[in-house]
Image (cartoon, rainbow, N blue to C red; front, side, top):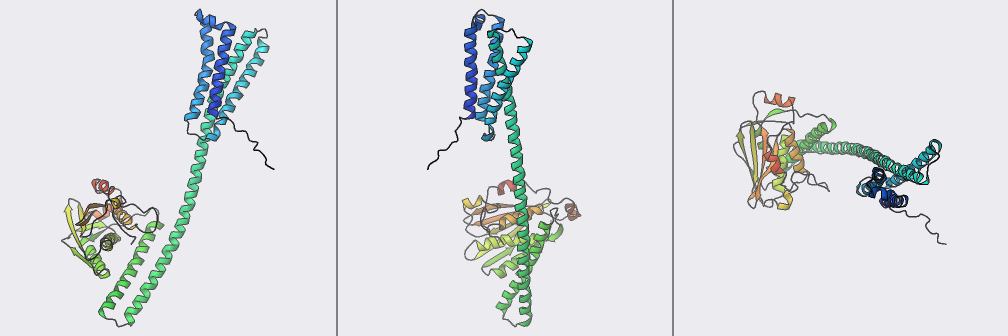
Length: 403
């Protein structure tokens, strides 16, 4: 047996408020013409004008209440309360005034009683509109506050979950890297290998050691919310030469040329990851033989390191995602993390040029001066080198896998 839905669909609150306003207006007009108030207005009587103003105010307030409901962005489920407040206050005022006058002035004419009824109901309805709007706003703000707290709670729970997962993954990766390093060291000590195999084994040992160092560094950064990088003076030529040698061992098709870079910079122990990521990015995303040239230009207190390759360049669409984390998947974090490392050392990283002849990236760092490292460690990561490089970087993009 089918049972009909007993819920009655009520008209929209703004329609009800509009009808109430029009209802008051019609009641006022009928009163004017039936009581002779219209003739007082025609005769320019002050009493007639006062009655028009007093009776016209509630109509305006009710119609403004309807307009507010139509335009407001508060939760619609609260809107019916405005109608309830309006009607309730109109009835309350009417009863209260009528009761009070029956005691104070019981000998009122019918015309005076109707006028007082209209006035009390109108101004009661107006008060209901004001109270109702304030009530809706308060409830809406409270709900927004509750939603914000709930979002914050969920965010904190998710952050905590991700933190535990991150700790677990770092622990597992570090354990496996230790195993690789340990077995590779045993193999190197106990085996007699030809030159090629020895080189491969050396690469495995070096890479596993680098993984351990990198994981430990990331753990230090993430486990301490108030992490401040330890600045030190580093020889740029040594950093670049070591990473170039590592890249050429890992990628036989790569040829890396380090031009004159006789300068020291103020950075930290993870600066080598910046150069490694840039070299590997250039090699892995360009087919065939890859030639990379690294040069440095010193100006005032900064040095600009240019890493240029002879690859195919970067597609225009890919430049839009420069230094941005991927929205999905587990690849594409390399350049995002690289830029963050550079900025950690008060530097900048930008795409200088790209096209058919290759791609150039520029890193700007502070040069080492007397007491520079000590001064930087007192106020780490508080200033950028330039604003122009950041604005340029925001409009470019490169391919990079998570290294």
